[in-house]
Image (cartoon, rainbow, N blue to C red; front, top):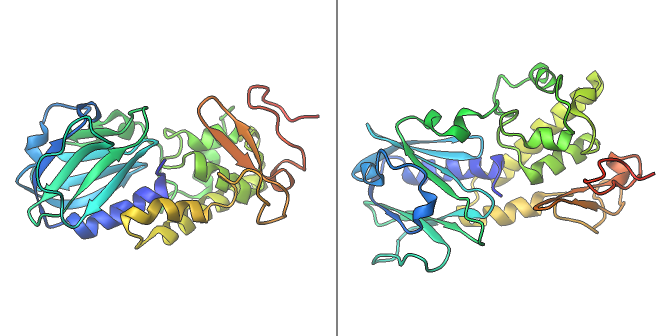
Length: 287
């Protein structure tokens, strides 16, 4: 799933390639991705793109005097830029293509979604706050006003484990499964540690890991073409998706805890005092 660093990079890429250009066609291929109907997609046509913003994991294309095109790529969605879009109309129901946006230059982008769980979402709205997922977002962890005191206040009454708290978009916007693993590894904390139990010293470590991990990932992704961002993300991960590999810090074997639809990875030596974590359903450390 694209998370804050990749969506930030897509925002920068689209700012460079879209702003100042006119949208001439918006073609819905998979009608299920469109979550709004008023204004219609056609309201975007003939309008110039004036800005591109990021709200957590949402992309927001702003048009001159018109609506916003807001997109959430979900788990298996992606954006593919094309300097020259194919001619002709795309065929519904054939392949992963969900939506196509064409510019007056002949360039544009496709939104695609792999797999059978269709969660990619597109909204056409007058204000991004009309999108429920945007309206409920917590603070952006890379915002200038997101300091250590704010993180401490957010976690003070959280009775959830750190892994779940970091992934909650209404608590902190933009962090998902992969970067929560990376942040907790950098902070040397168990994903099952209760958020409200952090000491001041642990809060300092977590804040530094949160900001540093995301900032470094954004810098790695900056300037990378949209089509290479997935590979760039994977190459920069130290524990997530690396079950069975040696920890790059201590050399211990990276372990995994599986859930019904996802998994987490961690280093026992760095994060849990050398003890492997039990299955999440047991919610405790193995003795």
